[in-house]
Image (tube, rainbow, N blue to C red; front, side):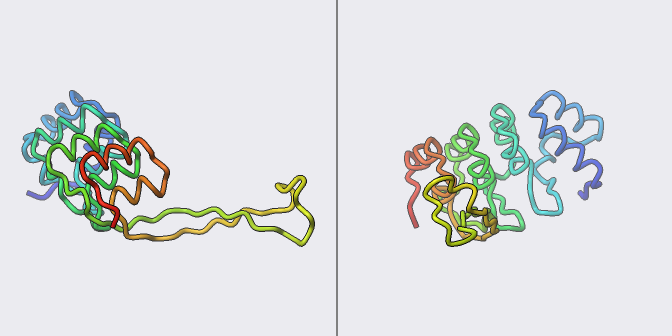
Length: 170
């Protein structure tokens, strides 16, 4: 069954609120059975668990897993819901996904920003160094697993959770 973009956006909005009752209401008013939610994806290939990862929706993550949403669904960037939950440092969501069989060492494409401080001139900047430097902003891409994400962003608690589930440095 194909779903209208408006319906998909409504569902994404409700998921962004993290409200299970509201989600069920939107599904019922649009005559969508809760088990049909697993077939709904957006134009980027994201399913409800991808959307949920961006809001750190603890109860909603488990609810969506129990509804049968595919925890190992890759989006168009080859990201699993686990990658999105890891990027957003959603510890409970990562734990729920891993305890229900998410692929822990899967790689995905991550776009991230780097910030480098560069001297403006040859001035001695040992004092007031912030006055003699500029920030250089650069976007980079990397192919990494959830443990790589935790290390990149220095999410130490997430790193501990991932290592408990035998995440590998690859």
